[in-house]
Image (cartoon, rainbow, N blue to C red; front, top):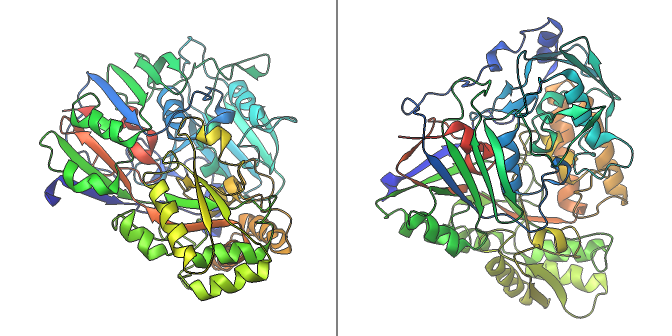
Length: 532
């Protein structure tokens, strides 16, 4: 049934700016014409049709979810944000950078960025988009006291201000060649403002659909925005996104026709599900990776030998073969994918070595078992992966106690709190974006608390240097060193990069290119897909 399994790879997903690109920017508006537009470089599988009710089943969701974009942290809430709201820029379904609410953008030095807004765009409440809405939406994340998960991502933003009737200017403390990419982050949706403040939980945006109902951790319901400004997008009459964290329930829903599409198909069931006459399996290779973050602010992982013991105790190839069944590639304890521009190709692949694991474990001085907290909410097969890790570590004389956690509330109560747990990351299109999201010292999502070692200090310095560097050769050197530092001193274990695997009704159609930066076509399925 391979004929029903469609695959796609990230093509040009990590476009980084070099000196030549910035010189183009200096030329004025329109310099990015090659990457502007709604359908960059993609061909339609068929002409889109309007109508129908799309039902999306997603393997994410928690009763602690909120509409506040500052707290968005998983696939369901990302999907919700992109369904009812827009950003200044977006990552297109071919991985390129595309203007969204920004009609044009430019910079001359990488420090001062100017965005000109589209005219005539309205929020769902009838308010016209203005630069003040953009300023207030960004200040929601960067103002003093903000607990936004995007605060670290925007740490170099010294000011954001209105410029005329349709312009916004960002002043950065240092050049950032990738800053335009960052404005497409799912936290940074543009919401309507009043007196300099946004209603962060109001659910009003400029997107293709109006949010009609939101039950945290249960469902979100939408209806078409009849005044949507973006031509050729938003084809469904209505959309429902349902949380189906249990993988069996999720897969049954699409098999039974109770859902039109689901994300996170268990690799073990791909072959079986591909035989269903009403379904197609869609598989995309990109930046998604699975991790086991060890927190350096908690014993015993504040000890480098303990971290190295765990890294050598894991059998990555076995995990790739048995958990992903080959639907992915090996990881090397850093988060930069092969698809990224500055992936460190020459970095030696770490492999399973029980003798070396035993050496470091004994050197750490730790006695007794080590607890690993896990749930399949982290990723399909996470519990089985933890059991494999426990078994491979036992050959090194290391006892790992697998603590199974509830799926509901996993991201609020376990991840970023327990000393060692399972996690997944969708990855990011650029190296700086990925590092700034989860590894630099200033981000709330530094889930390994890797901040205070000499190597971490060096890493943070290198990331800042690479961010400002415009020479691509020097950037490669810097990002290679950054990946090496994460691999050898950081607290994360990255055993494998996993393909996005989705199951969809044969009644659904989409562009030939499907985005590889997130599940469900960049979590913009409601905007990009349609019924045949």
